[in-house]
Length: 231
Ligand code: DC
Image (tube, rainbow, N blue to C red; front, side, top):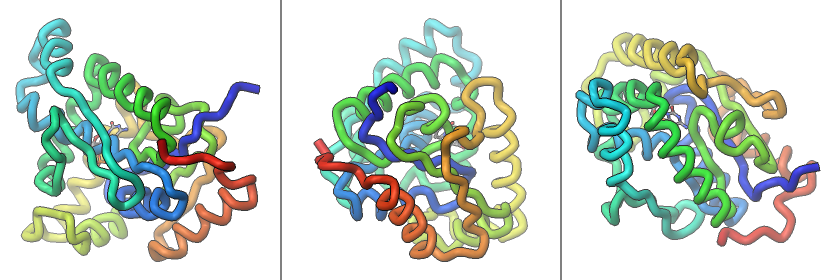
């Protein structure tokens, strides 16, 4: 049997609550927290809207200018891009869509997956995204896949304090989330889907504490994290 990495993966569609849950799960387990969506979002802003038109070589060169690092553990984990703290400025649906577009490019996925994998080898962490359990950490110790209807997710996004686009109508946000889901689920490389060995949780009728409790129970009855430390 291959050795399991000290990683818990949390995958699922936009707005399902992964970020909040991953932070709280990391806090409970004393692990670091890796928001891979934030990596795609900040790279999308830095590459700009023309990234898809660049040659493979030029795109690789641009991607390699940015280095991601992590500090702290649990709720206090902070992610940096070239020493600049990534904050809530990336939390708009416009940036989410830009990120989803560059996430289809193999060079971008290659560069970011390598950075994510390297963090998983150095730190014990909760990693959230779209392909954590399937591609980046197939050997993670625990895998979860969270789902909920697009309507429920749009409502959650509107109530999320970190959301920077308060003016959007619920119907428009639901539509934008549906379009982003379709792009993330149907792309050729690393599409959004549950890993075969992931626990799938439909969170549509659950609150955050119920989902967190379900995940913590699953980890506990399956042996916990052992004597793992965050780093
Ligand atoms: O989780 P998020 O909404 O912050 O992610 C923004 C976009 O980044 C998402 O729509 C697709 C892409 N993404 C990805 O392709 N793979 C990941 N592991 C994380 C995000």
